[in-house]
Amino acid sequence: MQGSSSLTADVVIIGTGSAGMSAYKAARRFTDSILVIEEGAYGTTCARVGCMPSKLLIAAAEAAHHSANAARFGIETGPITVDGKAVMDRVRSERDRFVGFVEEDVESWPDAHKVIGSARFVGPNDLELDDGTRICGDRIIIATGSRPVWPAHWNDLGDRLIINDDVFSWTDLPRAVAVFGNGVIGLELAQALHRLGVRIKLYGLGGLVGPLTDPEIVNAARSAFASEFRFAPEADVISIKREASSVIVTERIDGGVIKERFDYLLAATGRRPNLDRLNLEKAGILLDARGTPMDWDRHTTRIGHSRIFLAGDAAPDAPLLHEASDAGRIAGENAARFPFVAPRHRRTPLGVVFSDPQIAMVGKTYKELVQSGMPFATGSVDFTGQGRARVGLRNVGKLNVYAHPVSGRFLGAEMVGPAAEHVAHLLAWAIEAERTVQQMLDSPFYHPVIEEGVRTALRAVRNAMEDSSPAHEPCLDCRTAA
Image 1 (cartoon, rainbow, N blue to C red):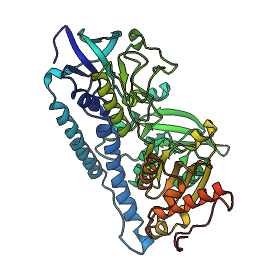
Image 2 (tube, rainbow, N blue to C red; image 1 turned 90 degrees about the horizontal axis):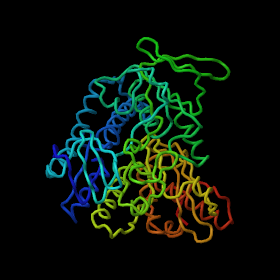
Image 3 (cartoon, rainbow, N blue to C red; image 1 turned 120 degrees about the horizontal axis):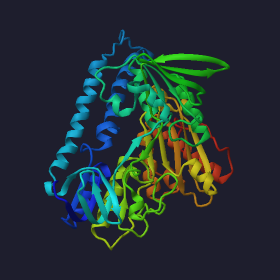
Image 4 (cartoon, one colour; image 1 turned 180 degrees about the horizontal axis):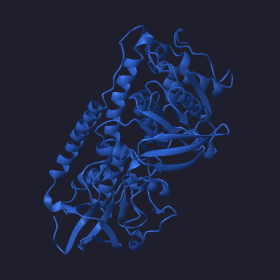
C-alpha cells in the first residue's frame, strides 16, 4: 500500500525479518489495524544470508572433509574433487527455496497492511517515509535488524572487500580468501571454505574463539581449529592493501614480516543494530553511546514508558533467530494489547556454532558467573578419551559445566566438541527445568553415546561441590555406573 500522504494504524511494525514477522502474526490476533514497513526485500537474515545458506555451505564442506578423511577408517576413496560451481549452485538454489517460503508468507498478508519505504521518526508516534508519506502509529515496533560493520579504511579494497552476504551469491569458489573476525560467522565460513579447497587464513583479535569465555574451553578450541587450518586468534596485522585484483595482507609473525596475497578479504568483524537511521531522538528515546535505547525491558520489549517496542537483532539481545522470534511475539502481543503490557518468559540462553568441532554455550557463561560474583563449581570432561567420540574419530574438545556449590543447581556450560548442538539442548532443558546436578545424574544415560561425556562432567562437578575428590575425575564411560 502506498501513495497516501498520511496513514494511521494501531500498530506499526518497522521491518519484516524474523522479529517483524513474528510481531505481525502476534499483533494480528488482537487487531487488524496494522501497518508493516519494509525498505528492502522481504525475508529474514537467517534464510537469505545467515543460518540456512551458511549451513548449506558447511554441509558441502563436511561431505568433502569426510570423504577426504575416509582413509582414517581404512576406507580408500581416491582423490576428492570439489566442483565449486556445483557447490555454489546448490547453496544458492536451496537458499532461494528457503527465502521463497518466507516471501510467500509475507505475500499472503493483506496488501493494505504492507508499506514499502524507509522510515524515520519525526515524533513519538509519527514516522515519515523517504517519499514523504506520514505514518502515525499509536504503538510502534522496531524490528529493523542489524548489518555488518568493518574498519572504514577497508573500503579502499573496493569489490575485493566482501561480507557473508556476498559469499552466498558466488557462482564459483575463489582461490584464496582472508577471513577477518574470529566470531561465529568468521569461524564457520573460514573452516567451510578451507574444507572446500579454498586457501584461507582466519585473522582474529584478542585470542578468543567464537563466543567462548571459559579460558580452558577457549584453549581447547584454539588447539582444535589451529590443527586443521591457519588460524591466528591474535594476529598482528601491519597493513591491508589492494594490488590490482588482489588483497595483500602484511602480518608480523615471530619477529618477521610476512605478506600474503588473497582474492578477497571477508569481513566478519561484527554487526551493529539498524537504529542509527531512525532518528530515535525525535521519539524522545534516550540512547547510550552505541546508539541503543538505555531503558529497554527484555521481558516486555518495551522501551521505557513509551509506546515503542524493540525486538530482534536491533535490540541489545542475543542475535539468534529463536530469540528474535520470541521477542517479536512478545512485542506484537504487548503492542496490540496496549496499555496492558505483560512480561513474558524468555528462554534459557542457548547458542551453537556449527564449526567442527562444534561450539555450544548454555545458560550462564563462565564470564557471567565470574563477573556476578556468584559462587560456582566446575566439572570437566576431555573428549579426547571419550568412548563414543573415539569410535567416530571425533575425539576433540572439552566440556565444562557449572553448578551452584550449595544448592547443587545446574547453572550453565561451555563446550567445544562432538555433537555439541545436541548436548546443548539437553543442558538447556535441564536449566529450564531448574534441575540439580544430582537430578541430572539420576536421569538415563545410554551406552555408548556422546552424552556419557556429559555424565563424566556432571560427576566431576558433583565431586567438586562435595570437595571430597578431585574436580577432574577420569572418564567412566565404559565402567558400570556407580
